Image (tube, rainbow, N blue to C red; front, side, top):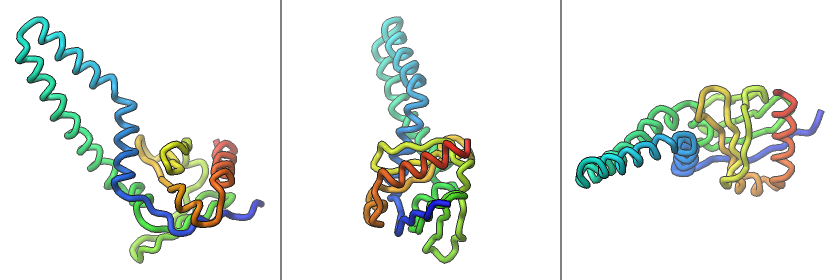
Length: 166
């Protein structure tokens, strides 16, 4: 049994969460935007240049609207709230225990087998949850460092537990 690591006062700004969500979604659906751009160019070559302008306008309007649908579907979920609200995270052998400072939120234990994968590249430790696609928990590097922990210790402990659980 390893001693738990405690991260005090972990919270992410909503804009940071939305940025990470948008990047993940666009990485997976970039081909759709590419196909729309190819369609615009081909329509412009076959018909009139005004059609290309209309198609590009459609792309520029449709992409933000799709991202707003993603916001409604994913960023307003309970799992997103876990990242946004201030909490104390304890990394223990059976999972991540989140103790929220908000009085209406109950403590939540995320077992290691509920985490699909992890990523530490966006200024946060991003733990992708198995609940549904594009659902993740974000732990900012600044809160890890403010808790007198090293990023290497936290990442190695999380990676070790996730690999043992899967």
